[in-house]
Length: 142
Image 1 (cartoon, rainbow, N blue to C red):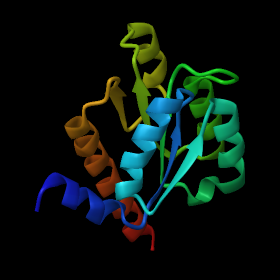
Image 2: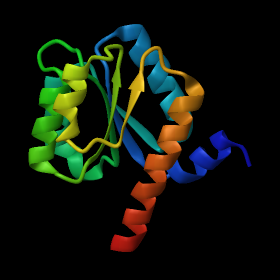
Image 3: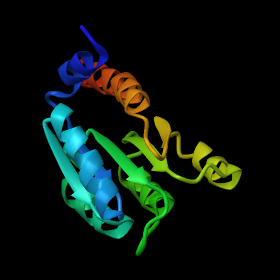
């Protein structure tokens, strides 16, 4: 079984929220995520995504977000999500590899980082690791 098939097995019952302000990137990544996940919820900026999360966060298994966005940046959104659900699984996608961002995110206990442009193999590998943990937690709690 290849990595993509393993990922499909782990994600078939999971919902992911993907937050990205750049139209082309959002379309491309959302299309890829929809191959794997049961449902992909889209946010075009941090403020919109936080509102979605407030309404439906208990049904979102994983949040994937860009850092640099209008209206509300990804870090602020993540901090607000952490106030609602400290255990939410979150992956950051960013084109910026700055130590300032990295230092600020350490306390947020994120599940991972993906640097843009995103390499498909790295994304699948990280998603597989994180979704295995999500499923283990779900099975343990049920």
